[in-house]
Amino acid sequence: MFSYIIRRLLHLIPVLIGMSLVVFAIIHAIPGDPALMILGEHATPGALEALRAKLHLNEPLYQQYFYYMLDILQGDLGESLRTKQAISLEIGAYLTATIELAIAALIFAIVVGVNAGIIAAWKRASWFDYIAMLVALVGVSMPVFWLGLMEQWVFVDKLDLLPSTGRFNPREPVDGITGFYVLDTILSGNWAGLKDVVLHLILPSIALGTIPMAIIARMTRSSMLEVMKSDYIRTARAKGLREFWVIYKHALRNAFAPVLTVIGLQLGSLLGGAILTETIFGWPGVGRYINDAIAFRDYPVVQSGVLVIAFLFVMINLVVDILYAYIDPRIQYK
Amino acid sequence: MQSTAQVNTQAAGPVRTRQSSPWRDAWYRLKKQKTALIGLFVIIFFIVVGLLAPVITSQPWDGQNLADKLKPPSAQHWFGTDDLGRDIFTRVIYGARISLWVGFFSVVGSIVIGTSMGLVAGYYGRWVDTIISRLFDIILAFPSILLAIAIVTILGPGLSNALIAIAVINVPTYGRLVRSRVLSIKEEEYVTAAKVLGMSHARILFSHILPNSMAPIIVQGTLGVATAVLEAAALGFLGLGAQAPQPEWGKMIADSRQYITAAYWTVLFPGLAIMLTVLGFNLFGDGLRDALDPKMKQ
Image (cartoon, rainbow over all chains, first blue to last red):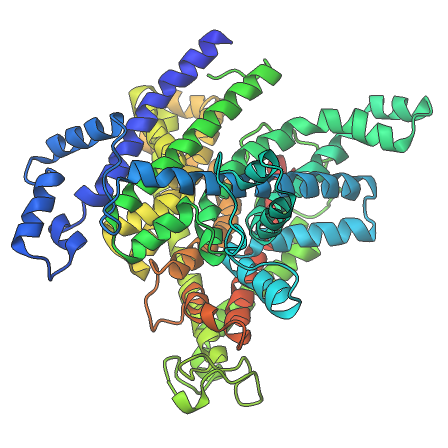
């Protein structure tokens, strides 16, 4: 196990170097003069020269990369051209917003997806099975941003049931302690605030969680169908166990490994989908931070936003891989 | 997408008296799957609609008429009009050309590059394999849409750059698939036989190994078009793909989202078009997988 973790960590080195090269290229490999691209055609020669000096654009490319890496390793993610603030200070608040949304979406995807998959397998070829699988198929075929807009149209404009944008009612702001507002409202005993924060989470987390939910539901169904043919399920039934326990205790436990793999794979789509969902729902996360930066040609923010999300993604995958190896010792890295 | 080992649980096929070939067997199995045929029908429908766009509608896709802006669906404008008074039905139809174009050619690009890299990595092994596999790992280290954003930021926004970005991010999907096929096929006796007979590496790769890797590539490619159409729409939506006034579905949604309360049709119809196209490719891809490659069946 220990040697597996070491090997997995060593394997990370080329990936992280490659990742940093791609992100480095966002500013330094823009065709033409990056300083001119970033500041626009109306920039003064002085401002252009200052930016070139700051980004070391007058040095050879390999030295630029060296300086870039030196900054990153010291935790310096550069400065936003728009707000003139250090990105490393700004990004924390956005990151907690994204993580909170992603966790809410994941909970939705797992709870709904796993249960829908189980019932569909249990009541195979019933109307529930057909409808659940149809919903799953439509779910993976929908653009996330369109689903978000349709949710707003139906649940906000037409039915007026849920708030449409942001993390809380701006008239009753939530005190930030950890930045995870669900947790913050619980910690401060602000129950009205908790309700408000949860209501704001519903629409964006459904939009973001629908694709993973659909994939998890399909995987759970096929895995359960496979397991339910086993002898030990027949034995469990033969000894008179209630069907509910046969399904949820005996079958699910054995059917869960492939579902867990799929859940791990979906974390990436959650982080990627966040950029679209956050744009629709005015959710102040890293995705929206990047999207706003694209519109303002704030390349340092695009660069660092991409880097932070990609790094988070790599780390999550590392933890998931190690967890697999821990749960199932047969899975060992080649 | 899952790389977990799949167990072939498919029972032996029905007894047939006629002459059988792998492709004919696949077609026979495919014909029995209603959902796959529905998917195929949807795909053909959108291809025909895209090709015959000038015949189906007499209006130009960029024809503005500000007097008629944000009009609801009617006999004259089936899908209503947008904020510039353009006929949305016309734009959705012409949009099929763009989405299918990007979907198809980005997948072809990914397949050509990914297959070549996978063949070389799997066949030669050693350091070549290490380098190519690490390259795939790096691409997969990014959430795909994020890498696409990074690439388009470097290359500059636009439809063709979006196509390139989508092709690049999906290369490892095909590369890893082909590599793993090559690794197993390489050990087959007919490949050993070809080697013993003195066949060149290139000939072994292209006349033995590649044809035997085709089925999963075709299946993955069909499902890949669905993903590519979604990714192109997402880039268009973010303003990094197709640029105005091109009638690209994602871009249309982005430009109209502020009118959704007053004019829902401006957002509804382009989105439905994306969903149906993607659904068609997903249905057909799933059916193809069951028909062509029973081993991949879940």
